[in-house]
Amino acid sequence: MQVRVLPLSRWKGSEQSLVLLAAEGQPAPMGWKGGEASLKRLVALSRHESFAGRLGQVVILHPEGEDPARRVFLAGVGSLQILNPEVFRRAVAFACRAAARAGARGVSILFPERGDAAKIRRVAQALVEGAMLSQYRYAAYKTVAADPGSAPLDNVVILHPDDASGKDVGAGVAQGEVFCNAALLARDLVNEPPSALHPAKLAEKALKLGGRVRGKVHDQKTIERMGMGGIAGVGRGSANPPLLIQLRYQGSKPKARVALVGKGVTFDSGGLSLKPADSMETMKCDMAGAATVMAVMRAADQLKLPLLIDGYIPAVENMPSGTSLKPGDVVKMHNGRTVEVLNTDAEGRLILADTLAYAVKEKPDHVIDFATLTGAVIVALGPTVTGIMGNDKDLVNALLAAGETSGEPMWELPLVKDYAEGMKSRVADLRNIGPRREAGAIYGGLFLKEFVGTASWAHLDIAGTAFADKDGAYWPAGATGSPVRTIIQYLIKLAA
Ligand code: BES
Ligand code: MN
Ligand code: ZN
Image (tube, rainbow, N blue to C red; front, side):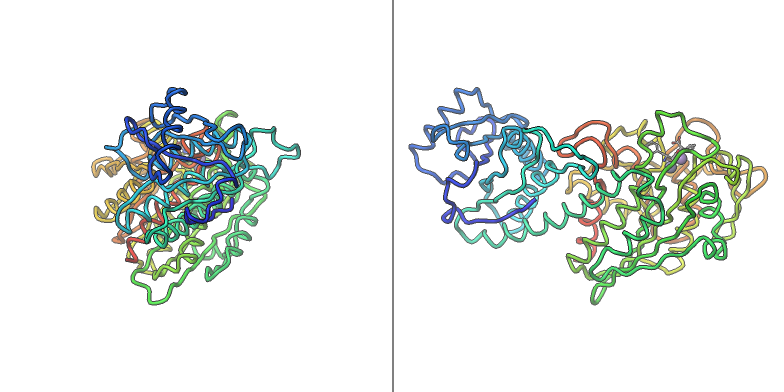
């Protein structure tokens, strides 16, 4: 999608449909600059359509006749008391969806707010996010053109009032584009069919991120030589060998050193502990953590953040075969600890354990891992809240705040000390599953905690949030791109 910023004075008015936002009980659209007469007409028309300004409500008005290029999509933002970036994201998403459904190719959005520079930027970014994220489609494998009315908008113009705020609107728009392009890259990677995006293909794409993101790939032999029994073990059941992808972005005068670790299971059949058929349908999503690392690193480069970021992606296929790990097998991890694999479907923690142990050797200031780790986190928090755990309160709080800002909510789960007993094995140091069918997300976190030593660490279980069964506020069913924008937001604050 092309996004442009235009001062109101240079807008021709006849170019394309207009999106106006309005609050409950406030008849004038936000940011309205037109004359009294046209406002009266607009308000009368919106009354006629029973427009009440509720968030989610969009009415189509024709204040200047039937010319479709002069339609107005009037979208509600709800109460002025609870306006925040997420409200703008959603209101714009509703408006853009209505416009696309009505056959528009683009819309001009009137900038709705006034305020200080920070606020103007925040709102501008939210408008762009609502537009770009809501208009995403995964069409790589479509050979038949979309039905009229289901094609997305291909351009958006942000109309800003002709005053000093133009620079800040531009800055917010530019940042919004970087955030969205990163989230959309993650969506594309996750939506890709699993046989098209096997570990080697994922590695190829990681090495081609561009900019100052450099990378190298450790092959199966190296993984074995480095004593990474988790990655080697999970990978050995597949015809596609495992890889460990290592990326680095080095900004100038880095203020902090961060390690990002992403689960890269390009397909999770469960292995010999085979999943039922319907649970496997969406298991191409099991590399969403890897996609997060790749997308965030590209954005960090585009934003030129003064940080040193190391990205680590263990890439494997979890498959059943004559060479697969068997329940009861014991593997030795990179840090020397042994793990009894009682369920081959708890494979994510095996590959992440090796990778975390490897990542902390570089002594980063913070380590954050992203993983579609447990079905249990979906039971606990549902499809739109990420489970976060960690050993550093400040890090967890900073990530929670970033999630709030980006509209990707997270909730902290406790790493209950007493439960660690439940991860002990009779024959090895640890087992890879908890003792009973309870607290599954927490047991996943507790297992990973054993491999980070004293590093400041947070774990995001994105099993529910990275992939959606149904269309959401600004994502179609499929990959959501979560938590990419949250992590970029966190890194910006860290670098500030
Ligand atoms: N990749 C799955 C978790 C998952 C479930 C992701 C649903 C996305 C949607 C993970 O590897 C897995 O299979 N976890 C097991 C762990 C169990 C065996 C301890 C699970 O959640 O059942
Ligand atoms: Mn699994
Ligand atoms: Zn998995």
